[in-house]
Amino acid sequence: ASIFVSKNCYKAVAAEFHPFHKHDVNVALHLLTTGLGVWGALQLAATVFNVPEAVYVYAGLIALTAPLGTAALHTAFVYACLQVPAVGMSIGTSLESPLELSPMHVCLLAIALGYGLQDLSHYLFAEKTYMGSYIGAKPWMLVVHSIWLMPLVIDSVVFMRFLFLPKLFVSRNRNINVDVANPKACDELRQWINQTVPSTKETTHVWPHKQEATSGPTLALENDAAIMANFRKIFATHHFDIRPVQGMNEIYVTAVGAKTSMSSDAVFYTPHTDGPFWFLPCASMYRVLVGVTPNKMVRTQFNLQHESQNQVLDMYHVIGFDYNRELHFIDHIPGQENKERRSLLKLHFVVYPKGWHWYGNFVANANQTYNTWARGNFLKTLRPAGMYEFAIAWWIWLTTFANYLWEENVGWANMVYILATYAMGPTPFLILTSFRHYGIYMSSFAFRQPEIAHGSLMRDAKLYKTLAMVHMARRILPVISLPQDLPGVLMACAGFLITILATIQLGMVRTYFGSELGFVKPKWIDGFPYNAIPHPMIVGQLLGWGSVLYWFAVREERLTTETITLIGAHMSCYALHMVQEMATSSY
Image (cartoon, rainbow, N blue to C red; front, side):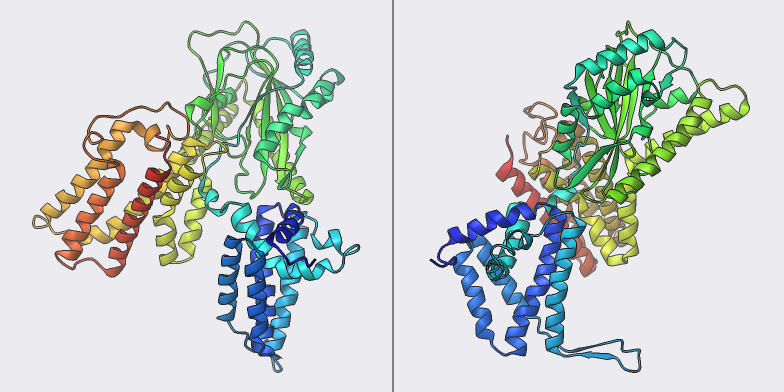
């Protein structure tokens, strides 16, 4: 029987195709590269050879053999391809003899580029090609593969990934929180510390790979099954490689409750990130803390997570976080006291795109070089003796504190995004910074797992909401004329006041989906405005912006078309999110 007899045949080929296309970026690029090649083939048939019937047969074949949703999207794609005809072009028009390309040349070039770039994408993301799995034994499958390639790619992008692009708005909790699978290694380190490391008034730092007694247990914990399994929950095997960075590892020992008023130790009690390389894309250096002694007193807090994620690192417990991006600090739990010096092992792992070993080495070396330099300054100022060392200690603390304020309230990644959109020009800047917070709201509400970093969610939503309001204020405030516009202003303020009162009733955590995300227990709110207005948080915004439209656009035409469009877009986004809450809320 023909392989095209039923849709089960398509599903069988799809089951073979998808294991070679697991990497999200590779699949997304396939949409462009395969699309380019198929466009060239369709235009070759329809425009160059003037046989549009071949295109109709191809589209009909896919419609009959692919799943309904895939077939519909593929039909739309074919129609779009036919609307963009191949035309001749000149390359190198500034030269005396430019290269002239006919429509046929353009089509053939598109096919060649599509194929070549598709294979390049597989190489860059360390995924073997589907064609390589059959071409030796079943070369005839190349025809089937070529015919079904575009619907298979559509399948991968839209249905296999469940529209993964909106998830990019979601800030995930990427911290590791687990107990070790090898407690014996912790016991050996504990015994060595208690027998070898003397008590001091400051923290003690030991390099575990410099002595055999600590190197073995450290190596065992580097390869601990529980730690690696937790890593793989965050970083999928088909996306990332992970390896240890031994040059950064250390054993950290402190006296019980020791804290000097101004030394480099004070940094631990100040919210901080450990490294400066937040800007290296698609890679992370992880610091993994392993408790090797009992601890009830010292708590590690994470500023951009919900408070429920704060951890007391007890013996055999593991906390891991991004060395360059995760804000954290330690404090003491009132009423608790450790009977033994708090000691822990600091392990380090570099996480980088699968197969990009050169990049992983670069990230590891950059972080290790910085860590060695910072460690030297840190050790010099554990016990400052003189103005210079006191100045260094203060400098360490001040730069740490400044970075904390910036990261907690703005964020370096947000700064890059805002500057990039600003560089694109006024219109992209306006659009891309006016509506991003709606993407954050709706994506976080829709894609609740894996766990969301609630502090990052609140920071980003408030930042982009503020930017959106600044954009609107620049357009609306100049047209207000008091006292004649006072009624309109009061109407708008009344609407926005409903939102403010709703926020007060819920509190900030519940306002940003704390109940829906599982950080706090559901609670019935019966105070105003919840006892009088359904969905007052959003209804208040709709009333406020509706009042602005009525007073300044309907009653008197004082707003520009652009401003009216912006207000309408804001109201539409709020309405869409309200429908989302009504349709999908758990409560």
